[in-house]
Image (cartoon, rainbow, N blue to C red; front, side, top):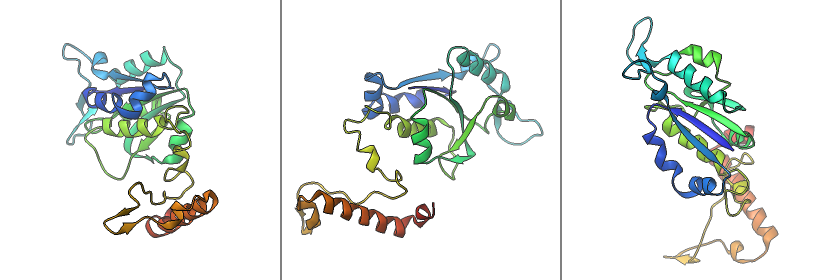
Length: 225
């Protein structure tokens, strides 16, 4: 899978993809992440990418021309299945979206900055708009890292145990059950006896019941779906 990310602050995106699971995905050739510096397509001597907004108001807006030039250049080399803009007014990102996106071949992500991007770029190029939550970040870079991590770990072969992702929270609209490791008794707090039984069917049933209980208590809205 190929994911290209347009940003005005590429330095913010280097570390998340150079370590742990995302690095492993790249080393295995399963996920190629390309960070594209929008300023390379900026205007004039200073590579301008933003300007004051029409109608007045605080905050700068990312301009049409640099973004259009950048997107058109990338599209000339790659056929994207989705062009995603990360924005607070997008559809809230969830596991179902991550599952779908992980099955695609190529995705382009646009990181907003300042007050966002000129609406005409959204109208002309963007096919999907995503929010990572009901809050505002300084830019889309951290949101992009979240989205790419959620997608990348689902690509077959990325995780050492591919069944691990199937038992994550939200995969079946349930939160994950409690998990334990050694020692079995820690300062008087003991793990449930069922986990020592060796009976896989009963352990699976216990985990399902715990997931259901936790979801009812903490996220009953998931059960409505």
